[in-house]
Amino acid sequence: MASVGASSLPATSMATEEVNMPQSLPPYPEMIVQAVEALNEANGSNKSAISKYIETTYGELPEANVLGHHLNKMKESGELVLNKNNYMKPDPNPQPKRGRGRPPKPKVPLPPGTVVSPPRPRGRPPKDPNAPPKSPKAPGSGRPRGRPKKIPRSPAAVAPSVAVTTGRPRGRPPKVKPQLTEVSVGL
Image 1 (cartoon, one colour):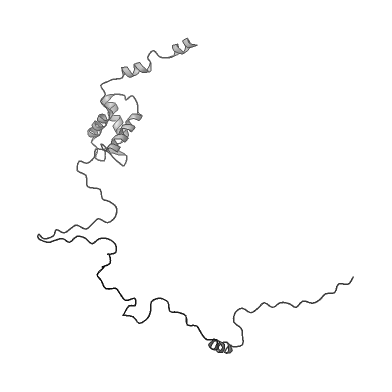
Image 2 (cartoon, helix red, strand yellow):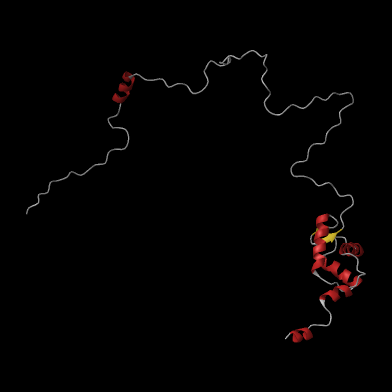
């Protein structure tokens, strides 16, 4: 059975295929940069256009998925910029990226000879130990702070208010219960 398997295999093995590969191919990043520069599209070149250019220039590529890997690596390292599925070379003098939120106001240059005071520290300022102690009551208002205390009423004041009622008690009237009648059981 071993002879049958050996006869069905081609004469070249995997090791000889790698040796027979053309060694004249430059590295993938160089080929990709050359393709992007040669295509010179305004919005950049997409992956299929780059692969077609490399295939026409250097012949058939050994593995197709290697191109995508190298494009992603070059994108992450900053050699290429991806914009709407198109790869392009980064701008040599890009605008600085704006952060989130409102940008700070431009600082106005001070005239020469002005002394700039240090900025106020954050938080509540510390108490002055030399300051006189404050009185517990504020002199501006005659009332004490907080909710006023409840004044207790005398029982004589409560009684006249009950006497002034209209004759109907307060609240919900009680439920009327039917009277029970006795039932005799005759046996």
